[in-house]
Length: 194
Image (cartoon, rainbow, N blue to C red; front, side):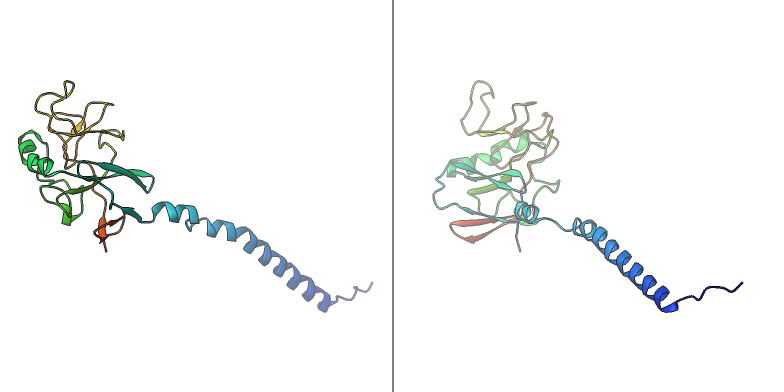
């Protein structure tokens, strides 16, 4: 019996066609997987720096903005509020901000670039609640020595007007100060300090 003739040309064509189809399928499967490693446009926008217009922010007022999905407070402190900050030092857990919760340029008594303007992440360092702004002096529920600040109603943590934590409260550290810089006297860029 004689063996049938093998068509090498056809065999080569089928081998190349199968390899090409397999390559296209592999690229089709790998592309979405590889693209998942890059952030989406929505994720890029959420992590982007935020410009804040402070031109209408009056002394004693606070505004809230969002950066990276977190509340950020920008507060214009009055002269009296700035002068009262050292009075809290003996009652604070970290009055000199030794625990690094702020950029180096904000490691000062006011924890800010400009003494009157505080920029702080409004999330309690205990369990992540959002403290309330309590600028009133000596309210009945916070005691006669309260000079204004932020109070976390979830577990009673207290922070002064420089976002420094009081001793003896559940929160372990001062509130975080995000990286920021002034683009002008009226605009702060939160999330970038370079």
